[in-house]
Length: 182
Image 1 (cartoon, rainbow, N blue to C red):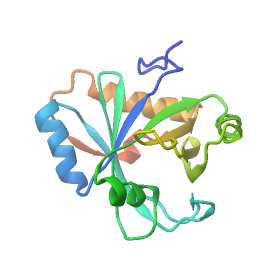
Image 2: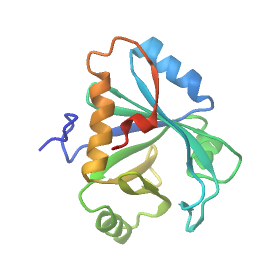
Image 3: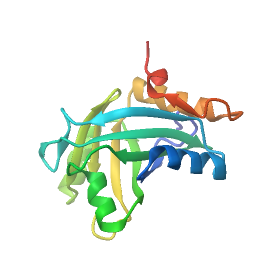
Image 4: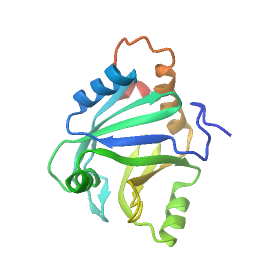
């Protein structure tokens, strides 16, 4: 089976990168690789999120785009609060951060992975439901993001993908709210 945006339902759907400057990173991906348009969420995280089991304070801005059937996410921290992104770039510098999978029952999948030794490092609520970031393990190149599969998630991801199909370069940066159901 496939998601409406063409990726198999059991596959990784996203590669994400921590970046120091979201605008510059979007421009690089667009100018050098033709990726776009980008949908930007100016402020996420903060109240309601958890980081390492404690209330989260860190806030981020992010941008989503597709290259073919693979989503690319760029994330910039907006403050100096502890976060999964700050952890990564302080240890390894900016660059690759995580892969994402959309799963039918995110809470059951998190429990299954925790039983195998995985540790939840971050949790938040997205427009489509729960989002969990798990430590990928000692030999992992990054974290694993698990996203709840539902109609809103599918609609949002598919809308980003559709905008990328035959994109003519116009409006390279767009507002995330364009993706949300009315």
